[in-house]
Amino acid sequence: MAGYVHFNASPNCLPAPEELPIAVATLLKPLGEALPQVVRWFTRWCHLDPDEPHVHLGPIGVAPDLQGRGVGTALMQRYVEHLEQEKTAGYLETDRPENVEFYKKFGFIVRHQEPLIGTPTWYMWRTRDESFKQAAEQDS
Ligand SMILES: CC(C)(COP(=O)(O)OP(=O)(O)OC[C@H]1O[C@@H](n2cnc3c(N)ncnc32)[C@H](O)[C@@H]1OP(=O)(O)O)[C@@H](O)C(=O)NCCC(=O)NCCS
Image (tube, rainbow, N blue to C red; front, side, top):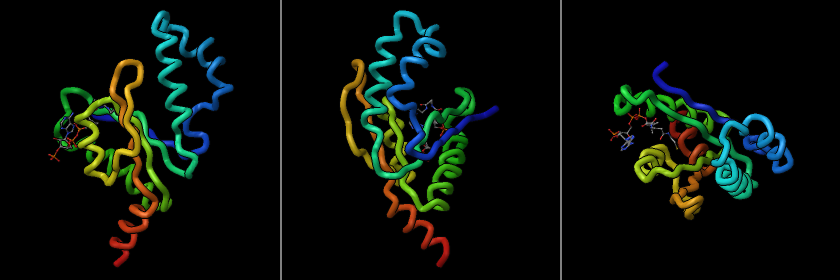
């Protein structure tokens, strides 16, 4: 496998706050001492998740030895095509400054930025209008 992309439509794109304790007790248990940090990080993501309808990106990843050859671009194009078909907004979080530039190539802008568990974090948004605009250009 060269790469992987996953995206999910709101409002069920992240677990509901009441589901977090169950996840902590089961899926996340192997994280051990890192668990409180991960819960703080994920709770903040859930809190900031936009109320406006959107399709949430994540995770996306390309095998390390295949990065820089266009696989990530192809995966993002698949996601953006979906946004344009659905005429909806896109949303994602990243803690890598180089990825902020990567996502900007696909029409995302930084909506909010803050440190989270000691790491700068960017919350990025691709407007619904952007999806309408691109879809209209393809139709013309
Ligand atoms: C981010 C990622 C998915 C991009 O996939 P990729 O296959 O390497 O990207 P591409 O080869 O399609 O590159 C697209 C463009 O973005 C640039 N770019 C991509 N990743 C970059 C990086 N980490 N640093 C700097 N530039 C990067 C490329 O130089 C290229 O620019 P160009 O179009 O001007 O040539 C991949 O690097 C990755 O899996 N990184 C590790 C996991 C990760 O960060 N996931 C996302 C978490 S938010």
